[in-house]
Length: 577
Image (cartoon, rainbow, N blue to C red; front, top):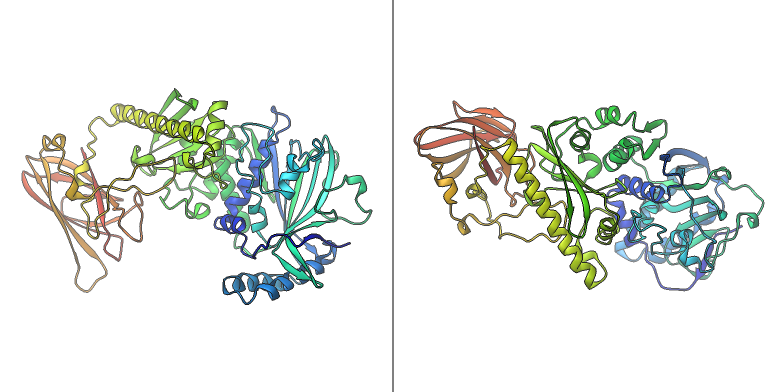
């Protein structure tokens, strides 16, 4: 038996754009795509969906037509090697294949208490679940609340395989099917030109029933008595601590569904369920503080603990805000306090998969965090329309019709307004004396920012603040008798340390806390990252990224240094004590 490819067709280069997009955060991509697909096909609503990720090795002679796949990759290299932009990736693929020897690493993903993928309910296979998965770049949903929106997430599964090859066995009420799928590139094999997508043992146009499959050994099959799907990705890339990173990704993205008993995830022998999730968070992600760079590297920098504690009532000063928001319907926001919390809100839909962690235009300050969920079915339909293929943002621009974009824009504005009102209510209750001295925002060393930028959606991004020259000190701060005079910095002789001198004028004696964060023009660090204070003037106490002390009547020169070897542009927040 051989792999079946269509001859001719459009030319597809080796740098598959979908695979490239999902490769950036591969563990997040695989966990999110496989798990959300399983949640969307939940069979019994009274039982949790279970998904098992199992790593292993298999002899190459047990993988159907393995030598043929190796040869096709060599033929791809021969066709595209003279193009500089493709040579490196193709060399890496061939080198990885040679590293395998006779033992091929794989990742098998099996879901339970799911319906499996339907493939016989419609004579047009493109309109079935399995057809969309195996032969389309589109989506198929049997539920308006399905987590997927673009239907391109399967590229995440190909991305973890150096050979871009998987075997699928799905069992549903309609029957069962087994098939190998591979996504290569346009190539010439035995003198004929073929396109990228290959199928084993079926023809490209339509797969056959299980009963018509040739009677010979086929690996990675599941028990026919269990509805559901097993997807096995063969020829994996090499990763460090792959199991640990998969567990962290599962925690960060699905802690809510796991805690609520809707989902069980197993990575090899580690089981994440409602009884173990708290201990596993403590084991794998014990820190509460989360960098603003979590979106760029969610596996290493994401931190679920602050959001988990907020949602489950294990934190301090928790408040719950519930409201029927325009377009989105019934929504809930919980806000809680801890000195290590990152000042962000985690956003969820009904499926309880993390969409994004966002500072929401800094409505929520550091030392606090929030968790938001839309529980309304109609609201979830609208939010799903605002998601891109990676499901990590809500942006009205991603809607496909003018009417949807208009409604989505209204929904996002209503959502931001709800969060702002809730935060203001929270502040009035717990921080009545807190002064956010916006007049000090942008008091920076370095290039000046360019001005305010209007947010179009819920995304994790850095705050953009206006130039200090464009703002005058707010009268409400003047009545507290605090005005700014300037900020200077100088390198301490014979050291890497920069000493900063902040000059404040005070009308009378006052107690003050000064919190320091990087300005948005800092090149190496982002807003909301912790800038640890190393030294401070006599009489000022250090507390991580803040200093506390007394202002005297008149001019005050406050000197301090940071745990940074290079000069950093700074923003400040002042809090009266």
